[in-house]
Image (tube, rainbow, N blue to C red; front, side):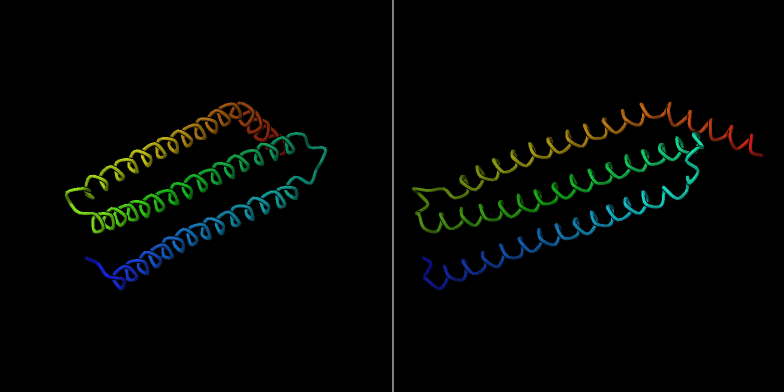
Length: 181
């Protein structure tokens, strides 16, 4: 039978484990925020520098080419940002699910120690909770995969739709270059 000191030690250990889990998720969120700031900075620098490269407002081909490049850079930015968000969310859920499994195992262990073995089977309870958590985790992973597939499909469709315009811009730019030479 456990005494008060044993319970306090377990309580302290659980609090410490929860603190570590929170710190881990906080560190993950902080890294994701840093990556987002870097992506946003690159995106702003790209657009602030893109205006200088086509100073001639009357050159239609140069303007179309610059707009196509901006569109391509925007697509890359949104793809990178979407990937960062999905990966960060998946990692946070993975860590949270892992911690939840640990908590459920600890709870089942505590129940088993409080109740006699003939009235309560902690192993069955722990297995039931683990199965429920696995099912929830698998469902969430399927949802993330579906979200990723939809995003990739939308990006691919956008790129396919823009390809004729980009090809036209490239041809016009090549023709302009030949004429200038």
